[in-house]
Amino acid sequence: MKNTMIAVFISALFVPAVASADTTFASLTKQWTYNHTLSGVTGYTAEISAFDSLTNSLWVAGVSGVDVLNASNGSLIQHIDTTSFGSINSVAIHNGIAAFAMESNTRTDAGTIKFFDTTTRTLSSGINSVTVGALPDMITFTKDGSKLLVANEGTPLVYDNPALDPAGSVSIINMSTRTVEATVGFAGVAQTGSYLRTNTGMDFEPEYIAVNATGTKAYVSLQEANAMAVLDLTTNTFSSVIGLGAKDFSATGNYIDPNDRDYISGSSGPTKSILRASSVVGLYQPDGMVAYEANGQTFIVMANEGDTREDDGDKVRASSLSGTPTDLRRLNISSTDSTPGNLVTFGARSFSIRDESGNIVFDSGSILDAKAIELGIYDDTRSDDKGVEPEGVELMVIGNRTYAFIGLERTTKAAVAIFDVTNPANASFIDMIVTDGDVAPEGLLGFQMGGIHYLAIANEVSNTTSVYSLAPVPEPETYAMLLAGLGLLGFTARRRKSL
Image (cartoon, rainbow, N blue to C red; front, side, top):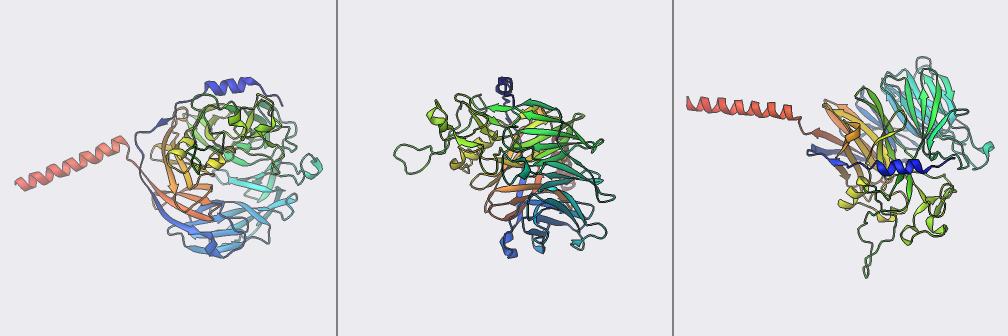
């Protein structure tokens, strides 16, 4: 791997002034919360959800099964036990068919995709089981539903041993035949960009997939490798693997709190975390990603969570390197990328918007941490390890605006930041949903029902799913028309009274 200072220099130059919008949503109202422990199922944790418009139901996957909920009131319709198939990692729904991503009980073995009918909530007729790669994680349909894409993560049993590391890949399922059209790997794929991690003792492991509007390209996050792969769906081949560079935390607007033990002298507990310039760079390492179109171009929104090997074999404290400043000694860093005086940590503590070539057009800087501090939900014990950890991302078009919802996994209460990303280069902070009673949002899902927009938040630690209704402030022209209408009504009423 060739790490150059060019990427860090560019990162230092690209420090946007993150605007805050003058208007917020008119209301962000929690409609209901379902506590999945009420299902009485051992081993269930709420993780990923999908909405079925045919039955107005929300399907929430969580390791040992799927809870099907009434989307209107959150009542349990049915629990579907999937343990006979393995562990469920994800669910996606299109046109009355629910696809379940099933990890084998021996996770290095091939996984399966199970197809369920959303009306009967049983295995669908015809072909309802398709074999894919090892550890199928995230799945998604193309917009027209013709293909189902499967991220086969292939996490190794033993690192630094290729024989025990199943190849990461993406399976492409043709939904008209329900057969695997191609399983696409990374051998021989061109590599570009910087800070592409190929020295971690494992191969590329697909984490998340975003598909463009036309269904011709998919963008695949390779989280531990700090990379994005571009998949051509017309040829079913990867065209490139792009190293995503590193973020300079010493640059104004990118400050972090690198120390989880900040104390006020004489106090018995930690003080509010202070964001400050830190001589370290952060690998972006996105988890959730969503693609969207703006100004005739495709952009990819990424939640820059950061991640290490599952066994933490590539993570050490910065104190292990000589000459590390006292304030940075508690910080977790990459042992494979850091050298004395050149510290590299995991995650960017932000979300980014990139173009199809992987170039950053916007990054939220330090605003996610700063807003969590301002709202009193920042967890200082996570300062040494990726901060608020942006993990999930969802996009919704409401009116003529495009909004990004960013789930923060490591705050003391579940939190979702909202940004207006209509103009990718000038995204603006709108608000932050703080959802009492919930902890650690894992999956976010936007859907419409009865003409109203909703956001479903599946929370892994609290094992809850909460649904919010979203009512934006009317557009200025709509508001003006409303006021004009009210003025006309008032004039008519006064005229009648005078008569």
